[in-house]
Image (cartoon, rainbow, N blue to C red; front, side, top):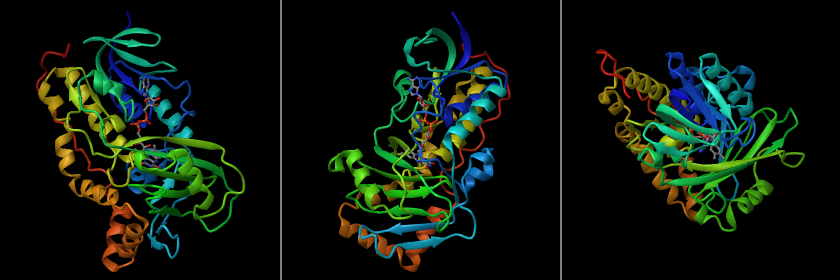
Length: 379
Ligand SMILES: Cc1cc2nc3c(=O)[nH]c(=O)nc-3n(C[C@H](O)[C@H](O)[C@H](O)COP(=O)(O)OP(=O)(O)OC[C@H]3O[C@@H](n4cnc5c(N)ncnc54)[C@H](O)[C@@H]3O)c2cc1C
């Protein structure tokens, strides 16, 4: 039977980045993803924040124009609050190209990637079942998204607090007012979150997210309704794509690692509870996950694994978890109008600018502990 050091389940950004780092340290890594191609079944809008663009090597050709303006609309859509930054705060990426780049980088570092292969469970502590046969692995990295099967199989924490998001992707003509990020606070279309319109230079992404049980008529109908009245440039033609999926907003999970493996990305709940941005967190946490995996497999020292704990990160999320509760509490159009009116005040604008243009999307997990003594390698 095939035997490897590390199986990474999921070739999203979290899985590919973690695999790249682990393989770069010389371990034998296999990544599997149930998707046959990474350019299909994309779930995310692909908005990258400045901090990610500064810290990680994203392919320049995949990034749309810099976005500096954010417009926050109340349910009436009248008189939006406009916040302007002096620098490019966001870029929307062509995610197929970003995944392709991450795939090539993982392979260049020595990871093997098998697409169209599904992880279906653990047979025993060291053996897993894949759709193309069983495999022996020393360690599993669960990068399999918000509803992680790996998390359940390893007895780690699972996401319980989820919203759902969906968007339509429209072609746009070049020209117009320049790129801007339009956000609509309206609990009728996005209960507990926002509706958005943003463009990547070639496509306009029109989306909604929120608590599904509060979306009257369901997510699909709500999105169609929003798309008919969405602010920003009106797309000249029908949608060419549709994206969507669950988004964990309960904060990073507490128990993220055990002797059999660990979790990264959405599987770890590494998403900002307030903004629902997960692309920066998944990359940042992947760095630590890779260091911990390599350190643990080289030494067998459980103390290395304990460094990969969610509790300290959760503590740094307190403010954002509180704001998530406040956002969830905006249940009527009148409350949303009042919330946007607050953002028109000096302190309201300053707070919104801090959230939207600040550097705090995800706390830096910090370096893993240095591995000093070589102990018994983990079995
Ligand atoms: C509609 C929407 C818009 C969003 N927009 C943004 C945004 O603009 N900016 C931002 O920062 N965040 C955004 N997010 C959140 C962000 O996309 C995620 O946090 C991020 O993509 C998570 O990456 P990941 O690698 O952890 O998971 P994923 O990208 O979901 O990757 C998980 C992978 O695991 C694979 N998989 C799952 N189960 C198995 C299995 N059993 N066997 C094999 N493979 C498996 C899946 O096929 C998938 O490829 C958005 C989310 C949604 C739903």
